[in-house]
Image (cartoon, rainbow, N blue to C red; front, side):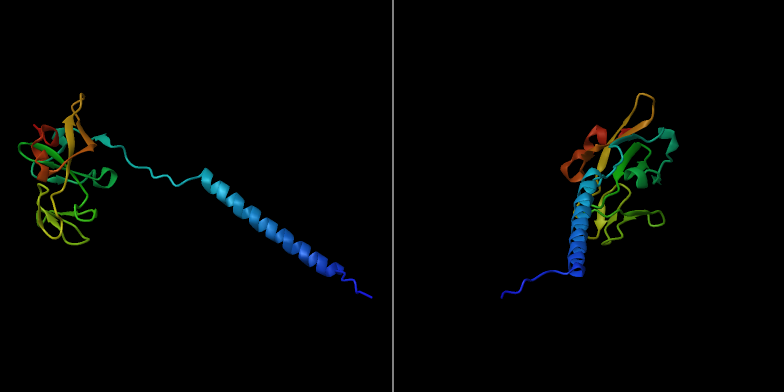
Length: 166
């Protein structure tokens, strides 16, 4: 006579519980994927153009760092006018620091040094810092447009939009 293999009640409940646990885990995993798709990673970047105040707000001969954190721009006023330098090192994209005592920008990552004009003079940076388009808005404020960059090695610093004559 062949023995019938019957599952006792305790084994059945154990298997039934494990099946529900597996179903709950799979459902939770699928639900987390759906929820993740509903809330994607979004990078909020500052606008590409902004008003940087009136020309009189900037002192001649100084590097103004008020827009460094928010927009990634240094404003430099000379006796002739104002220009906006990018705060991105041309070596690997780190953010240099302005060292007023040494009168230079110094990149903390690999030691590149830049004059106040943005010209590189030490370290591995292959080229000068870039300038952004700068103009006067209708209300007399300085308008910086980061979507338009000017590179010194291409002769673009001679472009009237790379420097605001005052």
